[in-house]
Length: 218
Image 1 (cartoon, one colour):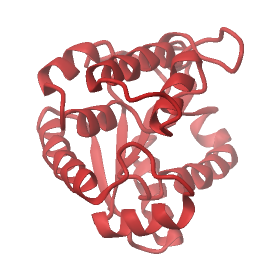
Image 2: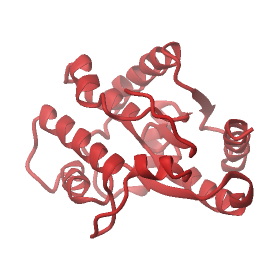
Image 3: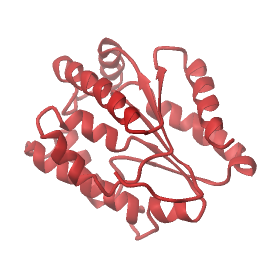
Image 4: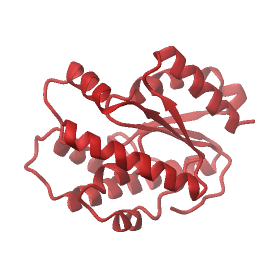
């Protein structure tokens, strides 16, 4: 992943399904809007995106398409990420993340390349995954919400009618192990990754997130 000089801050929320990334993203949205005078404007996003490739991925994840080879899924995620970085928008062509960061806008994303590396390296070569994501800019901060696999299954089963592609205990256990290895590896390589206990109350998790996010603007 390459470095990019920019004024805006790129913040990513990561974690197993059910870890609370979407909930915390919503809380962060409100807080960052309130802090706009201090931190600047923030653009809020997610992966898979709502773009053309992201929409295809969502169909595959919800099993509404026939099963795709994991290498195909990996390429789709990488393509969607490039679209996210260089040109994204709902039904129109707009500036991507890179241009926003260069203009001084902050970007907050629910998931990014750490998810691809953790989920897809179960069946796809990790070094190849890194290669097809090599143009992805490094986040200024990645917040990893850690929860046990049992908690992930409990939360997801309580909120889903249909099981998605990666939502079973054996797969999630392997993904959790991958996350642990990869976060350690990326931190050693210099990435700013902070792990927060996602089993704490929603308010307690958010207080920790606010503290970590505030630190990168100081």
